[in-house]
Structures are given as C-alpha cells and as structure tokens.
Image (cartoon, rainbow, N blue to C red; front, side, top):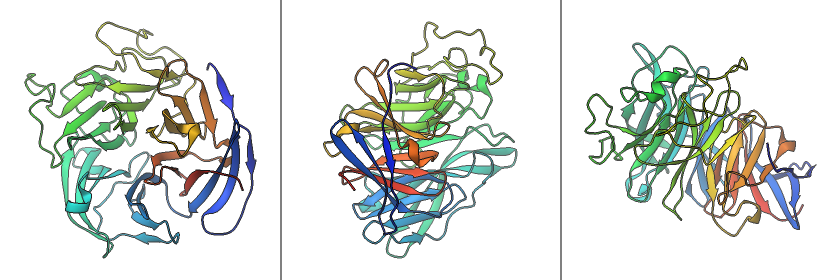
Amino acid sequence: MKNLIFLGLTLITFSAWAQPVMQFKAGSESYVVEKLTDGHGTIWGVEFINSDLLIFTEKNGRIQTLDLKTGVPRLLQNLPKIYDAGQGGLLDIALHPEFKENSWVYVTYAKKVTNGQTTAVARARLDVAEGRFDKWEDIFVARPAFSTSHHYGSRIVFDKEGYIYFGVGERGQADLAQQLTAHNGKVIRLFDDGRVPSDNPFVATPGALPEIWSYGHRNPQGLHYDKKTGNIYEQEHGPKGGDEINLVVKGKNYGWPVITYGREYSGGQVGRGETARPGMEQPLKYFVPSIAPSSLLVYRGPKLKIFSDKFVSGALALQHLNAVAVDGVATACEDRLLLGLNERIRDVKQGPDGLVYVSSDNGRIYRIRAGSL
C-alpha cells in the first residue's frame, strides 16, 4: 500500500462522563477522542435526531437513543423481530429527510423468510417523547433469500430529492452480482415508501428487477450522499484485498466478480484474474491488503482539519479509522487513526456539531474533537 502514514498516539484514561480516552496529533493540530457510551452490543448504525440526541442500532435487535447532554441511553420499545446470526442482525438506521414533520425512521435488517434469510428495509414512526416505535412496515425485501448468514450489506442514504438508496450484499453468491434478476450485489433506489421510480435504469429491461440502481458489487457496507457535489459514494468489501471506494452512477456495472483487485481467500485468483474489462467501472480507490471497510463518510466542514474533504471509513480487520483525500483519492496518502483503541470500527458519522462520531463492535460510541487533554 502506497504512501501510508501512521500517526502517533497517546493513550490516557479518565473516569468522567464524555470520558477522554486518547489524544493524537496531526502536524500542529491536536485531537481528543472521548468515549460517550459503553456496554452495548455491536453498534451497527448511528444517526442524529438533533444536536442533543443520537439514535443507534445494536446488531442484536435493540435500538437506543443517547442523550449527549447527560450521557444517558434509553432503550426504545416496539421493534420488529430480527434474525441475529453471523453477519445478520439489525443493521443500519437513517431518518427521513423530513423526520421533524413525519417521524419516519428507516432500518435495514436480516429478515427470516420461508426459504432462508435476506436483507430487508423497514420503516416506522418514532415517538421520541414516549420512547417507542409505531406502524412498522417493510418497504423492501431482497430476492432471493439464502440459508447463509453473511454479506447482507447494507447502509442507507437519502439524496436531496428524497429518494432512498441502500446496498444489498451478494450473500456469498458472487455470480448473482452480475445478474439483474437478483437484488444481491446491488445498490437499490426507491421512493421513501418503497415504490419504484419510473426513471430507474432497468425498469424497461425484460426480466430485470426494477429496484436496481447499480450492480456488480460484492458486500457494500459504506454508502454516502455528498451534499456538496450530489455524488453518491459506495464502499465495499473485497475478498482477500480489493476493498473498493466507488462513485455510484445510474445503471453502471462495478464488476464483481468478473474484475477485482482482490484474490480468493485461498490465495488463488478470482475468475480469470482480471482487473479491468470494457463496460465495467474502475474503483476510485482500492485497498490491498484489505482494511475491511464498514462505513463511509465524506467529511465537509472546518471543525476537524484532519478530515476536511476526505473519505473517512471504519476498518474492521485492521481496527482503525481510515482517512484519504477525495481529490486524487486513487493515489492520495492514507491516514490510519485510532489504532490505539484496538476497536473494530463499525460506523462513522459527522454530527450536527461538525465533529466525528464512531461506533464499535464492542458496543461503544466515541467522539473526536479538536483540542488537548
């Protein structure tokens, strides 16, 4: 891997709420990592209800809010039944762009069906004051289902027009990523109630599933809508190497498993060992060896200079926060941060305060701010 920078870290422990646990420096700037909550299951998705309240999913099927003024979590009531096994469980969470008016909350989750399990998207209305959900409904259930319990995807984003996008993993059935008759290995685009937009790229293609927006993905666990550019970026797991950051474009084919910069876990080549083929998109960046990316953020704002105009993603296998410039990303220098935490970082979000929040598989949420201990 080219131009790799490892930043020095100092591990310091305190005991108060909003507990500082780490300080690091980047050039002349100092940053502090604070632990906001602990003791939960794998925190798969984090979102902000407002500047004082965030909401998060636990893979085991729970959803909680966290009061950022007091540090007190609150378990929400009335959730759907979740299939929690392997990589499946309660996954991402997103608020409708007009949440303040309509109270809709969206989640992706592993759903048990008659012939196996699959990725589903559901929504419900959240009564914040009462701490409970109401009117749960599935707006999408991926086809086909499988008995395996890995590669579900799946992050959720909304664009400026209110369309919902989310990724569906290929469930270990690599060839399905190239088949428009399956939702597996795809990015999906829908109206907020699950209806299919008439301008989706394959609506008029015989035999194709009309929900598909792009295809040829492996296991997309990062998805981000960049308000500055209007671009949608996707990040996915490769096999042994070949993790990718992609610019998602309507109707495009991103190549898995025909082209990849990764190899089989055995070390052998994938397919014919091709990295390019006409009609298939190249990634903006690929990672060899894999970092096992779990989420994706394009940080915009002045609060944290170390992240400005960079792709920021969690890394599961290498247990760090990865940052790389959006401009010139293919050859840009990487920053690998938070190595001293020894955490599998699962989600990364920019808060309303302009700070970066990260969650971990160990059930913790951290906040990164500029400053010193």
